[in-house]
Image 1 (cartoon, rainbow, N blue to C red):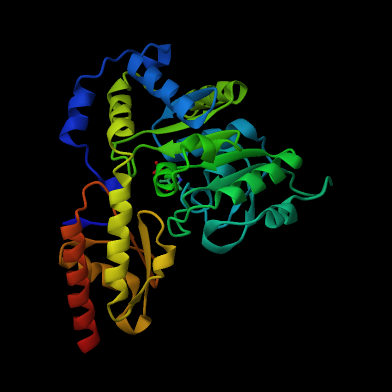
Image 2 (cartoon, rainbow, N blue to C red; image 1 turned 180 degrees about the vertical axis):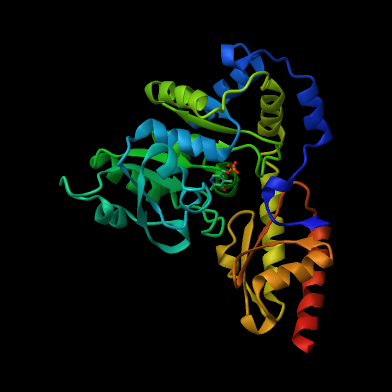
Length: 346
Ligand SMILES: *Cc1c(COP(=O)(O)O)cnc(C)c1O
């Protein structure tokens, strides 16, 4: 199987498993797992924040950042296509009592003017905007990277309006590797930042949320409340430490594979992909309805050993990762050519 559904499908490498097996562990609820503590300190430094908290999932990382910086009834300004809007089961509403003030703009991004438009005046009838969330890279935006100046601008505007700011950096290392801009710089305008070890970094589980001391005290408390505080998690933190050492620089290979895939797909009848838009490891492809629907196309591919995801009826997402080689990409393109030829002829 050539699994291009997501970068979450990676399995830990032998070296990662060795690091996990060798981890010195303790009870993290009591604060004495040295491997977790080392990971948290390392991430706090990497993002230029006071403190970091290791959590099971990226969803929990985002939700802790939201819960810690809002109160029920508050509004969150976030792009309408964002992960916290689409893929977190309504948790911001269910757990933090927040509503979204959705922003729009191309590729999951928006400008300061859009933010200004969404901040309501101080009026008892209205939803008070309390938190800005920026997703970078932006998943449904096509793995797009925010221009750094645009990030600086929206954070400045948010601060002017006394909003808190959170960076959903599930794939922030992809943005760093692609631009050369370090994670600390991407995170510098934000009060809190989250990132996932379980995506391009190839870990079996684990995410991080980092921020200032006062906010992080609340994050640690709500992690316990949400049931996310674990015991000998040094086993998982060891995987993350290993990934931070060995799996960041190699993300360039995933980005090259994504471009290779996009170029190959673009040459096939019925598929189109704007190569300019492929900035990281996500490839969104439009399927001409004359060649069937996205789900049908994905089923045909799956029968031939290639897995992809139809996120929308005519839009398919392919994701490159640690377990994908250039030869596998060539094979996947050949399989798609075969499927399209077949559908076309019938
Ligand atoms: C994957 C992802 C998350 C969190 O996902 P989990 O599956 O809960 O770890 C959050 N934000 C973005 C942008 C993501 O891609």
